Image 1 (spheres, rainbow, N blue to C red):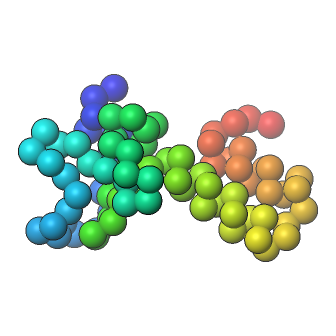
Image 2: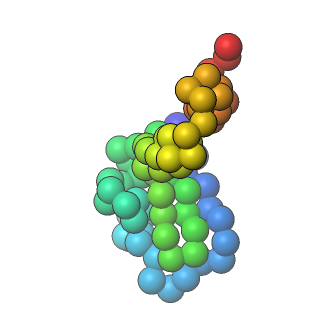
Image 3: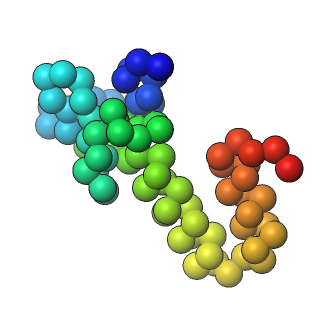
Length: 83
C-alpha cells in the first residue's frame, strides 16, 4: 500500500496544508504522519488519522450514553468487523 492509498481528501486544498515536500501529511490532532497510521483524512486546513477518528467516535458514542451493545455495533461497523 502506497502512502497515497492511505490518504483520503475531503474539500478543497488550501495553501497552508500540513504536507511536506515528500507528501507526508500529519494528523492535526496527534501530529503523527500518514506513514505511521492506518488511514488519514484530509480536510480543508485540517487532517485526522484513523486512530484519532476512533477515539473521537468512541467519546461521542459514550458521551451520548448509548447502550454498550449499540456502541459496539457502531464501532464494529466503523472498523469493518463482521458480527
